Length: 256
Ligand code: ADP
Ligand code: MG
Image 1 (cartoon, rainbow, N blue to C red):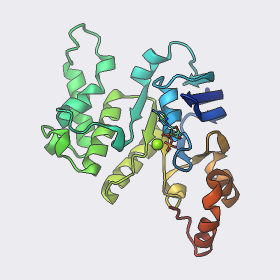
Image 2 (cartoon, protein in one colour; image 1 turned 135 degrees about the vertical axis):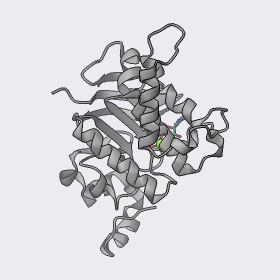
Image 3 (cartoon, rainbow, N blue to C red; image 1 turned 120 degrees about the vertical axis):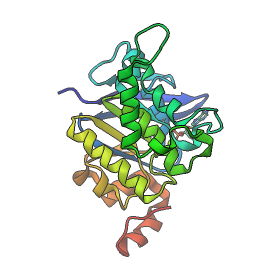
Image 4 (cartoon, rainbow, N blue to C red; image 1 turned 90 degrees about the vertical axis):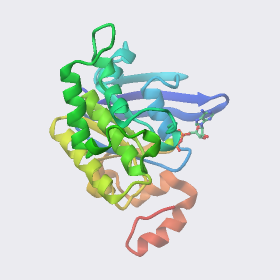
């Protein structure tokens, strides 16, 4: 089976500053994969370059076995959940409008008019994310957890095969966290792949089965049980390692 993501020698730079350098990565299909690394490690940049939002200076990207005509394929088969802090929540749109956006790449008629089937999928996605009551609410009037659920619902409506989520658990309530994690397990049962930028090392073992330590390049990656080691943590986080070690002795993995 083709990997869901295959990246070779990827370098991405903003002006003179490189965010990713000669990065190599393979993420198998059907993984529940976490990406961890310090602030500024290039995690968000990796997603943006996979999606074609940031142009790579060099390297190759293959998604779901395909390396050509990626933009067309991404629109229907790859769902992206951006970091909440990078979204303009004042944009005038209802919950329903945003979830319907997940269907647009699939709508073939030139007026882009959703069919009964499209609407059915939107309603099913809203229901799954517990958002039916909120469907007419403006997105500016939602809590952090509700906003995150709207984005997951949009991704569900898109019926993608690969889900890229940038810190979906940041600033949300535990109930929403549980809903999101159960969705990732469902994706896995359906053979779909999720890749999640994640910050809480304490929950990583429960939530994921594949792990990538990133700091400008891949420090380590593989089956979670093999690469979730303190040594890899130290390599990825460098200067804060000492601080963490103390806390690890006290039985946890928590870090700043
Ligand atoms: P992470 O998501 O791991 O915190 P990012 O991918 O957002 O890291 O950023 C990686 C590096 O690239 C950082 O040094 C950041 O300051 C820089 N960077 C990110 N976006 C831009 C941009 N649009 N213009 C210039 N530099 C950027
Ligand atoms: Mg980021």
